[in-house]
Image 1 (cartoon, rainbow, N blue to C red):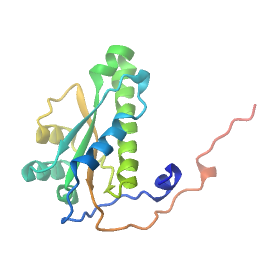
Image 2: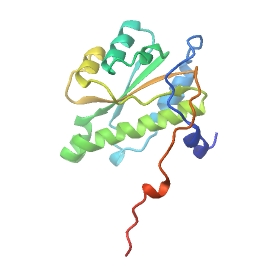
Image 3: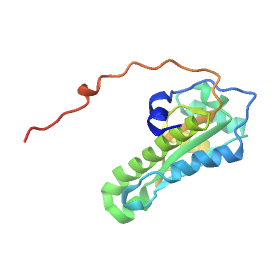
Image 4: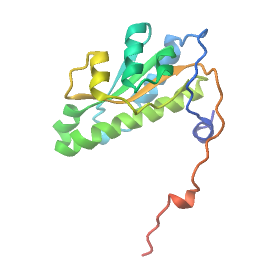
Length: 176
């Protein structure tokens, strides 16, 4: 699939085919796409937590995601995190407060596009209770922070193209 086609055709999927598992090989390709994302100063402050088989943990993650139960039905859940300390060591407070998040976001987008290209589906979940998600995953609150939750599986739905604002409403060009 061409890059622009993947960008145009990717959709947020919230129903997964329960009969199809995500192979280790496919998952590694998705994770590798996240690893290859750009990062501030090539610090690579992003980290990934993978949940596959632990139903109780999946249910706690879904509750932490403001009771979005579909999250627990995905064969794989990837939690994309930013390592604030790693970014701060190189960039001070801007690294801690911004670059760690930006690095994680770039990784999440790469993973969404890679999953789509491989015939998988996902949905970017940013609505979650940080403390509850950290407890669900035994992440000590502080330096490593969850930025996105990506439930991943084979799609059991194919959502329509959502309405988008026209490009001209995004572009603000200066006249010099």
